[in-house]
Image (cartoon, rainbow, N blue to C red; front, top):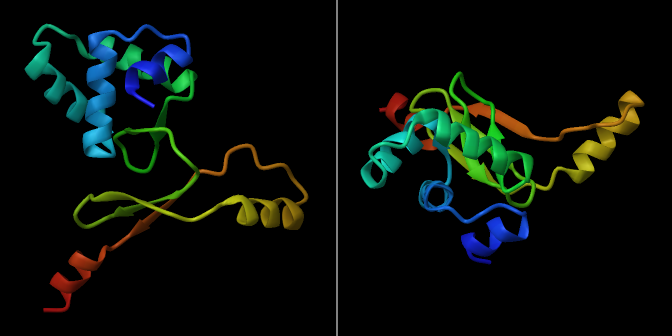
Length: 136
């Protein structure tokens, strides 16, 4: 589905600014507000950070974009199937890790006798590249 169709199917206008933000998230995978602002300023020099943030929030509310809270800076990505995030404490790399969380969530609900409302899992790691640097 194109980004235009994605926005329209969620009752949002496909403005050039929203499309630009979605293009950035497609290209980067994960981006901070600062990353998005820096790249959008190349195409829209007068676009304010508050407008970018407002558009991100609208897309988050519609489920188009997901917010990742793993560091002090918020990261954003286009919403997709559930997965883990691996964040390297050394180099700051943030990447997706394909792992189905449903069975994990069900086990937690069973063991804790509760209902899990949000099963976003973020792991802080030292990535393979940084481990290699330490072992040299």
